[in-house]
Length: 499
Image (cartoon, rainbow, N blue to C red; front, side):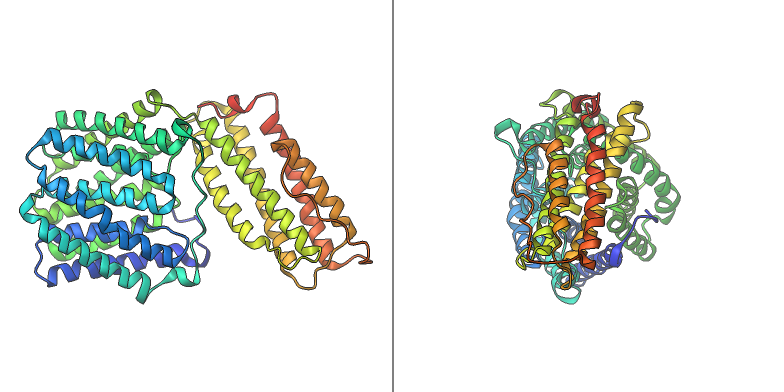
């Protein structure tokens, strides 16, 4: 959490903005005379809007934020109306689960709308909301989304100067071959198990198990990723409960210190979300304990029950990914690694064309896409490099692949920087180097589109820009050649990443 890089202090600024946006939302809810429960619902809506909306452009983020009530308000109405009919309520929530996960096939917007719809149902269970509270819940959510949007898109629009990197498109497929479709069935089965088992543990707090099962499937795409995320969620919840016993319980819901600690928890959630899911869950659990304190229902037994419900939800997720249309880790990692290698080739080809004199070629956006894909590869390989993975040979091979992909990314960044120099010019040696890179790439993933540029024989001499480009191309060629061993060595792909 403390050593993870934060270029441009982006995570720090986003975390501080979240505290400001959510704080403004809750303050306005209280000043307008809304109830404490409605204010909490508004604060959670603001948190979700700031946390889940991740379109690459500010305009796209604003559009998705404006659509959140479209997804959330009908769910709020259904959840409150069905409060007294458990069977119909449970069936409706499972339908929301399926639709919310299935919507991820539409990219960041579908992802955010699906999460918001699910969490609106969760919020009504958390607050035990009934139909008479619906007008206040609507008002609180609308007011909070407006307030958080005023901070995000008006007072402190960080993304206008530091655009979010475009998230990689979801893995494609048709029917049940599409990971999002398979996960929709898996998440629904996991939540159904969590719902039933959670109610056996508690008739009042069973929804924690459903929430756990749901969130374990967020941002995962394979069996191994889901299992690792479940382990980290339980670990973060356990440590958060210990902190809650030491911090939240003694406060007895005192407003001022509780509000201050909730603000600290919000900051921690946003600041640690990217580098550490366990730390993020620690802060989520502490914040939940503080909110229960404000509602006057917090006691040590409640925190212990939360841990038990979390375990039930994690067990449901583990059973679902093992038994319901399983998506093996190797299937996912192979596809993400191949996409990353194609991105390396695309960056290299664009840089070579730029050095050859094509001013329309720009490798910089492709380099940004490569960074996003590498993040997805690291997530896919996380189960294999996890300290608890007993398969040492596969762990070492996965680590080697990650290290070599990082080498490729470093060389591509250097090559893009050289190509951006207007004084850099084409050298005939670049053509041969680019062709060697292409040959190394084809040995890994087969034929790739876009070959090396034709040599400009009318450009004599060797140039400083070309010398630097050659260094990066040679480094890239070495990394790709070395990657053939862990990817295509004696142990095949399915043996390397078969989880």
